[in-house]
Image 1 (cartoon, rainbow, N blue to C red):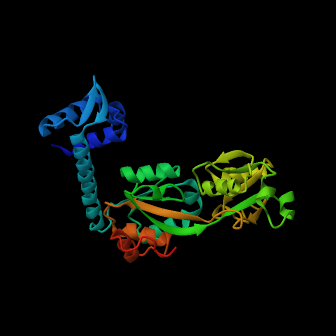
Image 2: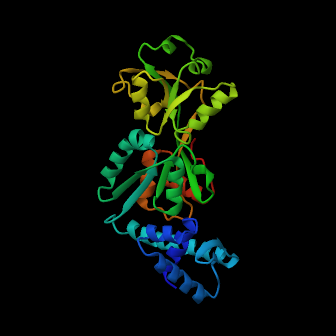
Image 3: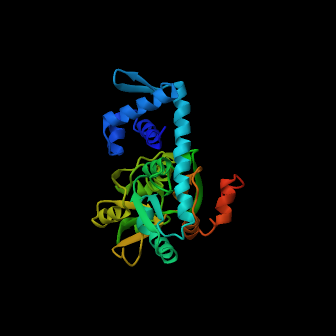
Length: 313
């Protein structure tokens, strides 16, 4: 039995039982993947995948057990590497962070600057995507830590901790009629075309629920995953924007006006997540505390032990 065979098994499962997709992801050939899976089945004396001709159609009962073991073995193999990095004087470590555009653009820069100052020899990799993608990347091990407002707390395999809370802002061009209508109401907002986040991004669900509760149907004429894109089109006069408060800079966005919206929309919580079975290195703990000071190593370790999963929010 070889670790590579277990990697093939897990990747085939991850790719919806597509051997060709698994081979592409692993930079190898489809016949090679099929052969190694066949050899492993022969060695174990069980059939792992159900087949219809050459196509895999399902996972057998013993295959489910074998796949669960393969996941654990590969996870522990990765943890051994992380232990080595943790005790190797940080000579070759890498921290991979998956997050959304808003967090990468507005929240993380000062955190990254401080982290690099503390750990100049650690390489950083930041990958941006939707909250669903962020969760998937952490689950599959291609990211160490995931940071997002949506989706992370839907997976039992992830330990998800609250970092900070934030609110939405309404942004308009200067001189817009809404600026005179105080206090701002959802009904007033619904009179104008709206520009805001894509359906699964940056607290969008809270925006939708607020209008639904008042039986209002806003005209969301443009959505984006990027706060800067939203502000650009608001500046062109195409609509009223709803963005995360951290995405508005009065000095940089001087052509726009911002209206508080805490009375209109629920607050949002940005969370950080990692696999429950992951060995956290010293600099993983440091990064989390820089992002959210209440996430001390002691607090995170307590959450890992099930002694408290909501440190401070």
